[in-house]
Image (tube, rainbow, N blue to C red; front, side, top):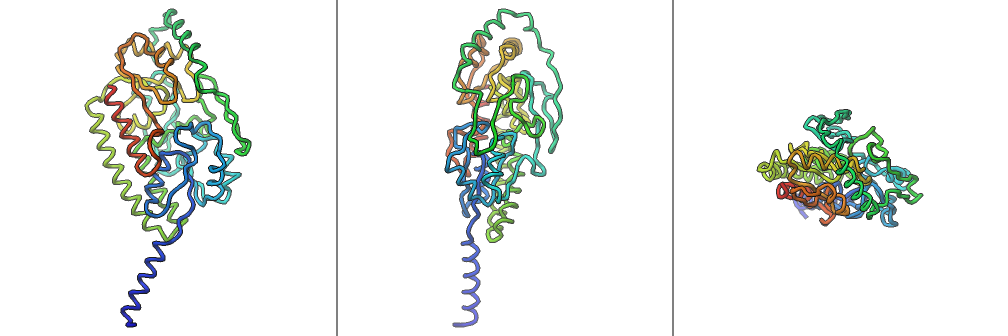
Length: 364
C-alpha cells in the first residue's frame, strides 16, 4: 500500500473514531431546556427529559425511569431550585458524580424578581444580567376598594372554584429529600433559593441564546471528541434564535400596546424581551389560588382600563377566569409556557415561543 493511501486510511480512521465518540449521558429538567440541549447534541446523542410533558415542574415526584436517568447522567442541566426545589436533593442523592449546571447562574443570564402585585406597571420590568432588583412599587388603581358587591361576587366564584384539580399541599418522594409547601397569597409561592427570583427565564430568547453557548461549552469539556459538533450546533442554534426573535417581533408588532391579563405571572421574561408588557396576573404562581381581593383588583382593571384579552393556561379550571371576566367583553385564550402539547426535542423551543406570540396576537 502506498504512503498516500496509508495516510488517507489513517486520516479516515481518525475521523471515524472522532465521529463515533460515545456521547455523554445527559439529563435535563424541563422540556424547553431539553429542547435547547437537544439542539446542541443534534447528531451526537439524545438527552433524557426528567419532568414529563404536561406535569408541573414545581411539584413532581420522580418516576423510576427519571431516577435512573439521573443516576446514569454524566451531565445534568436544570434551571435551579427556584423552579424545581424538589430536584435539589435528588441531584445530591442520585447524580452526585455528574457535572450539574444551574442555568439561572450562567454568566450573561438575564434574571428578574418575582412580581407579587396583581397589577403591573411599565416600571415593573427590570433589565440587566443577573440583577435581582426588588419590586416594591404599589399600584394606584384602587377604585374598586368600596365595591363590596364586586368583592362578594369574586368571593363566591373563588369559593366555587377553590377545589379544582390543583391540591396545593404536595408531598414528594422522600428519595428527593425535600417537601414542597406552598406559601400564602401575597408571597412568592415557592421557597425561592435566590430571594424571590422568577425562574421562568427560558421564555427570554436572549437567555436561550446564552444557554446554547454554555451548554456547548459544558458538553465539549465532558466529551472533547464531539466538541466541534457541539460548538457548531450551538452557533447554528444562536442564529436560529436571532431569526426567531425577528419573527416574533413581526407577529407582535401589529398588537403592541394591547392590554392583556395572564393567569399566573410566568411571562415577564417574554414580555421584557419582546416589549409586550402584561397589565397584570390573576395568580402570583401556578401553585397558588388567587385571593378574592386579588380577583377583585384584576376585575377592576379589566373593567376600567379596557383590557381586551385574558389568557389562561391548560391546567387551570375555567371558573377563576370566568370570575375575572364577569360581563367584560375581553377575549380569552390559552397560553402554555412549557409547550405541554409539543413533542419533546430540538424543535420544541422555537415552536413554544412562536405559539405564545401567535396566541397573544390573535387574542389582542
